[in-house]
Amino acid sequence: MAAMEGEHKHNDNKELEPLLVYGPPLVFQLFESNNSHKYHFLKAFSSHLPLLQFLTTQNVEPSSIRAILCNPHQKVTADVIKTLPSLSIVVTTSIGMDHIDLPECHSRGVRVVSIGAMFADDVADMAMGLLIDVLCNISAADRYVRNSVPSKLWNLPLLGSKLGGKRVGIVGLGRIGGEVAKRLEAFDCIIMYHSRNKKPLVSYPFYSNIVELASNSDVLVLCCALTEQTRHIVNKEVMLALGKEGVIVNVGRGALINENELVQCLTKGEIKGAGLDVFENEPNVSKELITMDNVVLSPHAAALTSDCFYDTCDFVSKSLEEFLYK
Ligand SMILES: O=CC(=O)O
Image 1 (tube, rainbow, N blue to C red):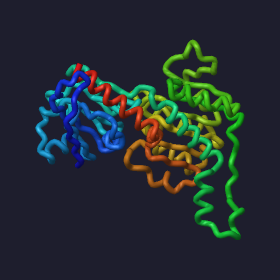
Image 2 (image 1 turned 30 degrees about the vertical axis):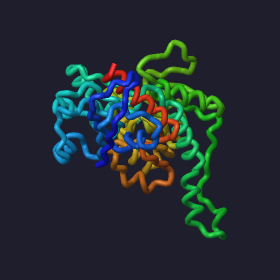
Image 3 (image 1 turned 90 degrees about the vertical axis):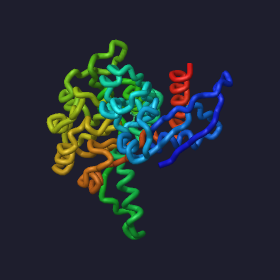
Image 4 (image 1 turned 60 degrees about the vertical axis):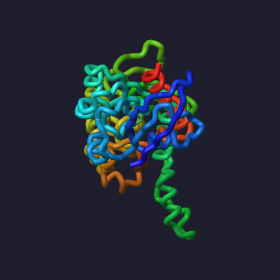
C-alpha cells in the first residue's frame, strides 16, 4: 500500500480539511509523476486490493472515505457504496462506467464523474494500431525475427493484407468510433456502423442489425460501452457472418465479445484474426488466445499514454476540488 499525505492551501488560502480518497495505484501515479500539481485533496490511499478488503486489512475507518478515484479495474459495487456512509463522489479515470453501480450511486445521491471523451484520440490510435498489426502481421513478424537465424530471416510463413479499401463496420459511433472513422477515411476504407440509433448527421451507412453489418464488413471495430444490451453483442453468429477473412478489433470492453466463441471461431479459421485491448475475464487472458499468431493482445492499455496521464491528473483534481470544496 502507498499513502500520500500533504498540507496544501486552497486557492482562497483556506486550509482544507483532510479528505480521504481511495483508488488503485495506477491512478495515483498520475499525481506522483506530476509534482507541480497541488494535492488539494490529501490524504489519499492507494492499493491494489478491492476497497472492502483494503478497509479491513488497513484498519481504515469506512466513514472517513469521502471520495473514490477509480479506473475500470476497481469495482465500485453496491456493497462498496453501502459501506461508505460519507461517500459523496466517485471519479473514474475512464470513459466506460460499467465498473460502477450507477443506480446505487444515484439512489444514495453519490455523484459520478467520468473522464468523458478525453481519451478518444488515444483509444482510436490503439484501434488502428491493433488493426494494422493484425492485417500486416507486425507482432508475429517481430516474434519471428527475434527467434530467427540469418539464413531463415526471409522465410516468414505469413502473408499480410492491406488496410486500404477494406469495408470496416464500426460498432458504437460515439467519440471513439468517430475518431476511428476519421483515421480509416485516410486509408480509403469503406466505413459503416451499428449503434443504438441512426445518427442524423452521419453519412456512413447505418445497420440496425449487427449480423447484417458483419456480413457486409471485412473488419469490425468495437468501440461501444458495455451494457446489458451490448454484452456479447459479438457472438458466433456475428463472427460467422463476418467470415473467414474477417478481423475483429476490440477497444471497448472484453465482454462485448463472447470470448469462448471467439476462441472457437479463431481456432476453426472461421474468422481470420483479432486485435484485443480488452478481455472478458480481465485480468485473466484466455490461454488459447495467447498461443495464436493471428491475434494481437494488449493489456487494456489504450489510454496509457503520457498525454492521457497529464489530462487525467488535471481532470481528477478539478473534479474533486470543485465538488468538495466549492
Ligand atoms: O477502459 C478505458 C476507459 O473506459 O476509458
